[in-house]
Length: 323
Image 1 (spheres, rainbow, N blue to C red):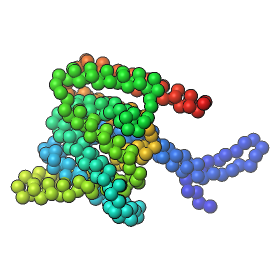
Image 2: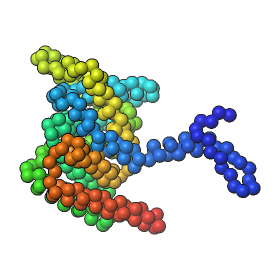
Image 3: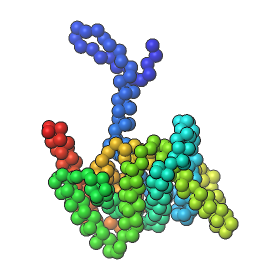
Image 4: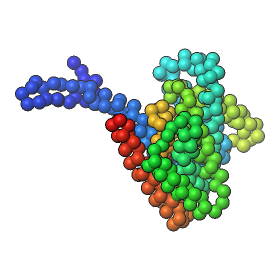
């Protein structure tokens, strides 16, 4: 019989050799259904995104955003069609209780995209990193206030250490970090909204992009009427790379949606430190932004908080199982 996955031989001395062909496939499914794995993949993808958006340095942020929305909608439409889930879209359109949270999450993520693209292409990558360091703290606050999640003492200690680090970084920055605050608020509220939506990741993301699609197309029309279009005059190779913004946008959001459905919001927030850490390293070593020693101290404190949080979470899980 043909194997549907990698073949493994399982045997004990004196027993018959048993051929199993589904172990690799099942273990792969278990890994990809793990919330932590999905979160790590999503945040690594987001961490390297500045490298992608820098390809379009000469295109205004609003125009990049409009293309990002349109091509994300196209990509997700194709994916949902392949999955044969258009009936789910009809159900969402007919349900106000589902449609309103999806509309809110669509507007929040579009705002987050716009701020992020503008910041990257205007030399504020360090501040974007700060914004995503702030976001987990906001996630914990939202989880405690609205979702009744209760961090243990060790987790509160980790939160305090991370909060101190962010405060040090903000003071060293020397001015009100509006980019960082806006990014943290928009993405934190987006994550909170996703926790309230019981919906397949693909259908949910298509619905979110559908909400802002009319705005994006309207902006295209405005740019064309005013003679201000830039993206359509790009070299063919660069324009193809812009078309891929739909894939670049959708993939990490799909992984994030799977993670949000499987993890506590507070835990999901702390995994997010992977993304801004990558951004910070890119700003230092690739984009050569100035980084002070104080910022590096804050960076060390944040990673200390991560270790403390991880240890406290493991101990909390063990105590819960023991009881």
